[in-house]
Length: 182
Image (cartoon, rainbow, N blue to C red):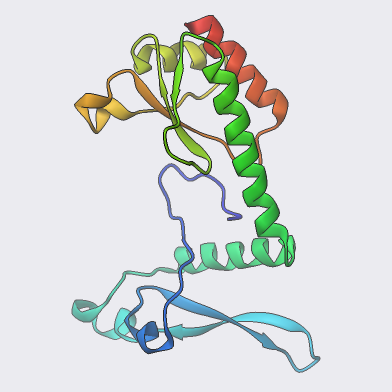
């Protein structure tokens, strides 16, 4: 959404609600307007006052940095144009499904794709994920998330993700590296 990786945040998300629930939303609401010259612009249209004056009633803790993230994301989405976000989503889906199919063809790895997925999928690895990731890192590739850290039943399973910024060459490099690591 136009934000760089920041080691866990801050990030943002988009969601919608009915008008009657707007004042219960955590965060801030940005809107579109027109300036005095007739040019389109985006402004902060709603920010719950309790975030600033009544901390005990606040629905969120918003800081200036988070407002900057929201602004950067709004600029990114507006620069993409009317169909841009849809195009980015298509790229994510196609690249993730391409990568999953290539990994699944390796034989030593098995992609768990029993349900539809967007840009993340689970891979059963032939050895512990921590070892696979260490070997990938030696090749300059950041591996997937070791799911056994959260669930002991997910031993040797890694969560992989790809986005619009990954080229076909990068995806193929990942597949070649996984094959070598197996």
